[in-house]
Image 1 (cartoon, rainbow, N blue to C red):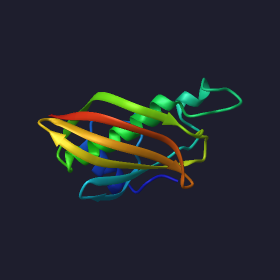
Image 2 (image 1 turned 180 degrees about the vertical axis):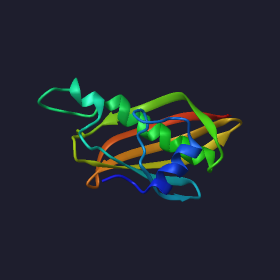
Image 3 (image 1 turned 90 degrees about the vertical axis):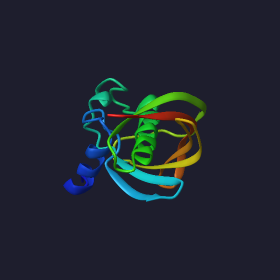
Image 4 (image 1 turned 45 degrees about the vertical axis):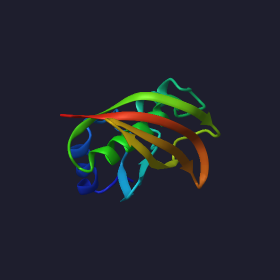
Length: 142
């Protein structure tokens, strides 16, 4: 189950990450001050080979990357650019992500000061928060 090619193309045109390091499959909603994306975790991802054999769990740092990529999509507004993470705060891991899960990634834009965009993110699986974090990014035009 993969997103429609046109939806994936919109993401590829907006941020520079590519498979296997693209952790957003679909933009569900983009509005004033927020964006909601999804990632389907198939179980075929390379990182599951070593994290952990027999008990595959998506690494927390890659969950954060999914939030960062979602923030970059918000910043880009469909204009190409490179979202650079400059700060991460208050990360809380509250659950595990396993093969077959669908990540719902919610990023709220809190403020912009100069070139810095301030965000709050939650990643949910089946409406349960598995990760919450705050982060700051800047957008460098490509």
